[in-house]
Amino acid sequence: MIRNVAREIAMHLCFELSFTDLTADELLEQRLSSPHFENMAPEYEVYGELPGPSQKAYICKLVKGIAAHGYELDQYIEKYAKGWRFERIPLVAGAIMRLAMYEILYMPEIPNGAAINEAVEIAKKYESPDVVRFINGILGSFVRTETEDAPPAKGLPSDAPEQEAQDQ
Image (cartoon, rainbow, N blue to C red; front, top):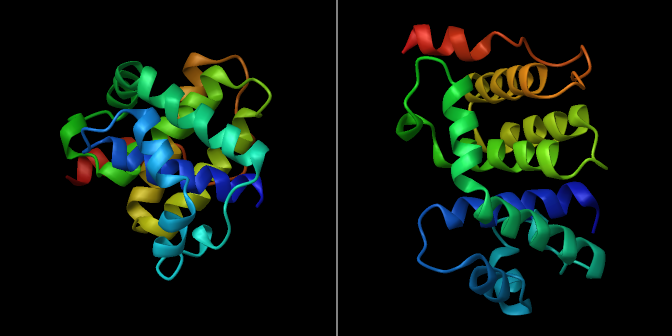
């Protein structure tokens, strides 16, 4: 299993954290099991094989970190989603942005541009093009404002959140 697949599985689990009463540890124990992967594999290709030790550690670090820093991450999302109330942001989009922001803030070994690009690629699988642009714009603004390392110039337009807010 490669890291982008592990990242997508972590996004699924972070999405699930949005509406479950389980703790991050309980969710990880239940969802990183053979029966769960066998059950999910027909619907989602990323569940085709169990994560190895390093991928499992990566998934656990992301899910536990996002659970621990959820409020902070949500505040950043709300700050950069100009004109949007956090409650209006789709749960999958929120999970994708939390994941990328966590990597940017707490995993310096992952380049900011890679975190954004991977988030955009995951978003393309689950969201409409408008929401993908919205996610890209928020993450780009977040990196430009909150970090010293700006993302690479390629990608989608960075003014998407403002445009999307105007369209709503």
